[in-house]
Every structure is written in C-alpha cells, then in structure tokens.
Length: 255
Image 1 (cartoon, one colour):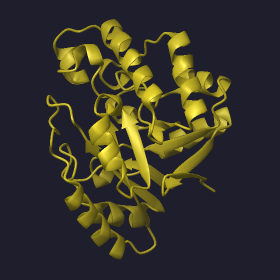
Image 2 (spheres, helix red, strand yellow):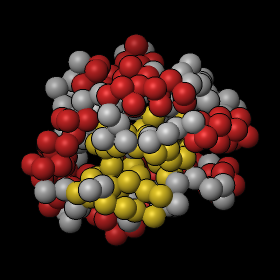
Image 3 (cartoon, helix red, strand yellow):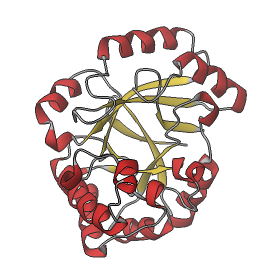
C-alpha cells in the first residue's frame, strides 16, 4: 500500500510524529508514505506562517534513518498556489518528491474555511459555485503534481454540486498539464458515502482522457494511515485508472 497524503506535527492541525506513522506502516503493511504537510499562506487559516521547512526536513531525514523497509517520500500540500506564486515558487525549489495543490478557501469567501461557511449559513450552492471557480484558476496556474481532494466541500456539506462543463474543463487542463487528481478517502471517515472524488466525477475524468490517480488517506494521526485505501483501489479498477506515485517530481506507476 502507498499513502501519498499524510500530515504530521509540522501541519498546524496535526500532532503526529513521522515515527508513529512508520510504526503503524510496519504494523499494517504500508510500503510507502509521503509526508505532505500543509503550507498555508492565507492569513485567515490556522496554519498561517506555521510551516517551517527546516524543521520538516530535519524530521524527515531523522525518520528516513530509521524507516527500515518503509519507503518515505517528501512532499507538501500547498493551499491556493495561484494566489501566492512567490511563496510557492520559493518552496518548490526545495527537493520535494511530490507537491500537491489544494483549494481550502473558495475565493469569494477567502476568510472562511468550509466548516465556517457551513456554520455561517453559506449554502452549498454558493460555496460550490465559488469553489469550482477557484479550482479552475488553480489548475490553470499548475506547477504542482497533484490536485488534492477535488470536491472537498462534500466533506462538510455531505452533498456534491457541480457544473459539468466546468468540471470537464478542470479535468482537461489537468490532463494537458500533467496534473494527477487525488482519490482522497478522508470523506469516508466524515460520514460521506464516497471518496473525494467519487464515481460521478471519476467518470468525467476518465471521459476527458484521465488515466492516472494518486491515492491518499489525508491522515492527521497514525491510526488513520491508509484508511479505506481499499475503496480507492476499487475505484481505480472500476474506471481503468493506474495508481501512481512521484519520486523527485517524476510520476511512477505503482506496481
């Protein structure tokens, strides 16, 4: 098993160590872990100015020395890279194996996270309308390897709303620019029936020429490492997609 989306105490919303993940990986048979801690430049985010790359790399090198049979990969999950190109370009020069681009703040509501949008009475329709516009801008900017949890508002609103034409455009740009979507399983731990994305959007992705996907648990604690990855693998098989990983920013098929 390969888990390409894992958070540690170098993310503001996690307290877990890399060593704890390695121990869990040996316990359940995970062969590869990519540590993708949050980089959030939005001043309204709890992780604003939290990420310290020097501490991340120190943890990572120490963990690699004791990883044993578990392969470790370095990564980051950068929020809204198209809004913060200077910071993104600066960090991208560091030797990450893998860079995930994500949208955590729909641009119209850039001061509110999804849970806050919900608690403030912003409708799912309004949230999704702004969110898809932001995702489109994000993939047009590109320069990252993977688009994280493409329909993340579902994790909070427990519903999926989308304009098919816009989603098709997003996936076409991904295919043209070598951006691989993630099948993120964390929604299954939040009461949703499907991964992010689920079958509905994966069918559109495949019809637009998509043939590869990343799999990630979005774990913030070791007990969630590789959670529900079997469900993600079933979707790969259903849609004829190949699971991939990244090493030195180069895509590799998982065999």
